[in-house]
Image 1: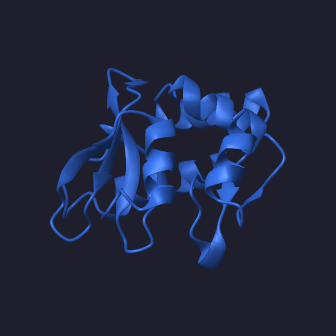
Image 2: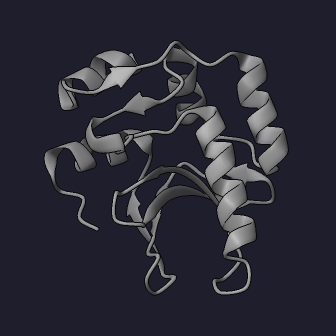
Length: 141
């Protein structure tokens, strides 16, 4: 389902083989956050959606872990804590897209983190809405 939809919206993007359930579970364990069902389903179909100019629409499980660990440690002294967000993609300008995490469970709505002012704003009701709005230009950051 996801690959067909994403191919319509992003015909130039490529896909990786799907993530194993164990890879997703390990990423969730390391980041202490249960991924939203939509993200889990997409990662099972393709372990990342890769775009032009190294701008991935959805990171692989390993990139999700790496990016979240990096911001949680490297930026700990200068920004609000990041434990309440699970980042899954970047906007290409330093901003990141993520799901809010409440008591270890990700909600399905998508937020954008602005790296310049540390603001966090709701921008899509779920992963599908994010992908569609980002593809057709309605999502601006």
